[in-house]
Length: 66
Image (cartoon, rainbow, N blue to C red; front, side, top):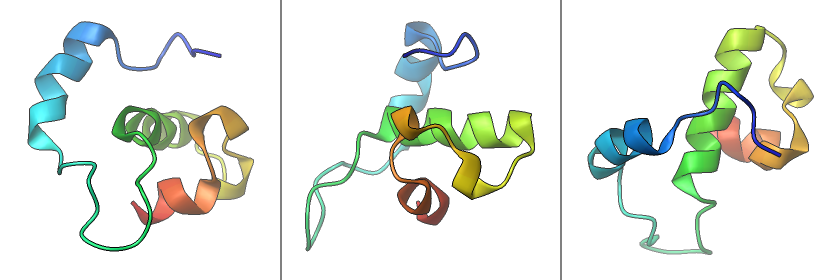
């Protein structure tokens, strides 16, 4: 599933270098940054509670905490 408001490839190419590396210093591997950013943007647009985040963007707690 891809929402029409998700970041496009050109937008993502400009934003990606500004984000931290996906390799964690400890613990498990991080969820893909692009999904998390799109999830945060979805929540900001919808104005809904974090728990209503569509499953496509990953666990709502992960997106909220990141």
